[in-house]
Length: 239
Ligand code: FPP
Image (tube, rainbow, N blue to C red; front, top):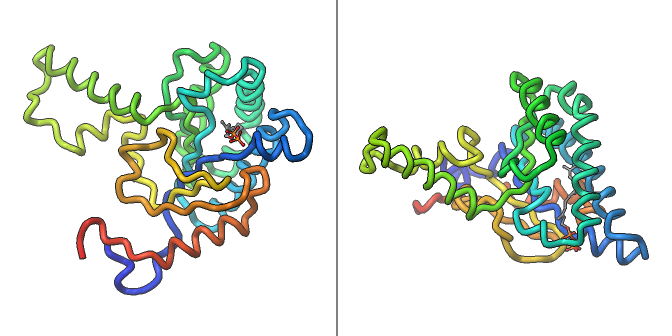
């Protein structure tokens, strides 16, 4: 799809976001880190609403990584509590024709959270306005390993010829199976790294790094990121 050759790119169909800077935002205000996450969760809702309005079809956000368990227990609990409230109020999103999906290993999460996640996914499965993917206990390397493990298991059971494994089969066993790769990745907060997010899926994604902390992120920042994206020339390895 070398749209860039013929002029401005259209609005990205899929935007991935690393919601970073919550802790620093709170610290600068003399507040506990959890206040930053709370504000970050509000911003997330607002940005999802805006994305739906401007025609973005998928938003994937990094809410909790496989490494985030290393944080103090009280911070982990606070993030889980925010997710619980978000899920309990998920009808606010699903009423707006949003489909919700969760990416990551759910097994270590509290039982009630897992049930809420399954319910919301089931109830919103037929919504077509926008798909919101929340990466929760997500790690890009773990995701790739889990796809490899599943394919290896099938091969060992004689159900799969190893020579039939190609990129598209491998991809279908990732948490994101069936979801198109992100067109644009946004990382606010000034950090310039991927932090184990969507390692497979970001192979040809355009990156925009912004010097704003996530709780301060507004629709104007999103517009700026999209503006940068539309001026890029995507070649997907071609010329
Ligand atoms: C990174 O900022 C942010 C997180 C690890 C948590 C993100 C979680 C939310 C925004 C709330 C829950 C989400 C939903 C969908 C309801 P940081 O804490 O690493 O910030 P710092 O680098 O400034 O310390």
